[in-house]
Image 1 (cartoon, helix red, strand yellow):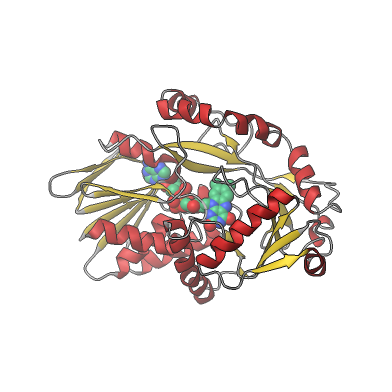
Image 2 (cartoon, helix red, strand yellow):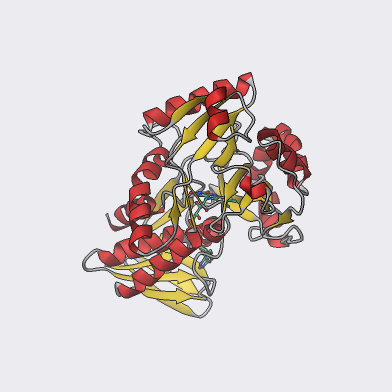
Length: 393
Ligand SMILES: Cc1cc2nc3c(=O)[nH]c(=O)nc-3n(C[C@H](O)[C@H](O)[C@H](O)COP(=O)(O)OP(=O)(O)OC[C@H]3O[C@@H](n4cnc5c(N)ncnc54)[C@H](O)[C@@H]3O)c2cc1C
């Protein structure tokens, strides 16, 4: 079968490699950038999620759990750092504690048997500088450089006989009675099947190609800050708050990077550009497409209170730092420096609801990953298998 994959992020690269390994396939992987993993896969927290939070039975819960061993083996086999640092979710109030019990119960239902409930004394023993009334310890949670994983996946794809076309901006991927046609500004090629895993631009490729307009992508940025070396020695696990269950983000956390320095972030706020990695990035086209979509306005109405509440976190580091100091009071914040933002491709439905689970949809001979949020990078290997199965059915 001749198959095209649009988008060489971690998911598209994994799908292309998966298909190239299956006998009888000729696979072409396209990306508009000159480097693999430039967007979401290169701007995230780098956390391998253990599967704690997700609704039991959901694709997020299943794919995350099933992907972890595949990701870990791939990293070990290819010499990519995979650091099982462990994570604590820390409850600070009675309400948090009730939320944490919910997460504990979900984690057990999701098969994360390694998770442990820590009392306040146990928490103090594990992390003396963390303040809270209880915590969940997830020893399996790890950190990895997802951009590196995507790059090695693309290299392996090429070694398996795949064709990698970087710098090819795909305009349409249109289903035809017998297959699908991929068009860029200066090329046109026929395939039997196409997979679109274009992250922040999947909805645009879909609507230009005659597929459904919804769900649309609404970009939510997350700011990250780097703590100084001394502040980075205060904890040894990734430290998370108990998240707001009404919002599909995990809350501002403290996570280590490969070099041992800790990052603070990400916040979650509406981005004025789909590829807005700096606070000054504003795109008239991206703002226009949001304002022109009914689903966006409906989302605004549904989430107005939340938007007002999160406003202080959107600008500058003060609110994020205060949040982190609530968890680790000894953090000084001296010399804290801004890193590039990440931008999430959040799928929003016509009625303004935020899609929570992964959304994989086939229309004709083209299969779209219409929502691939966190833990999408953790789940990439399993998402790749699912996309490949749906596309080649
Ligand atoms: C701030 C933030 C923190 C996160 N933290 C975590 C985490 O800790 N753990 C975790 O598991 N997940 C995390 N995620 C989610 C994770 O990063 C994503 O689920 C994952 O990277 C999605 O990969 P992808 O390949 O689908 O998308 P992307 O990496 O965005 O790749 C899409 C690709 O499509 C290409 N493309 C777009 N349009 C076109 C076009 N017209 N033609 C050709 N190519 C095109 C782009 O250039 C890009 O390379 C986080 C995400 C963000 C933003």
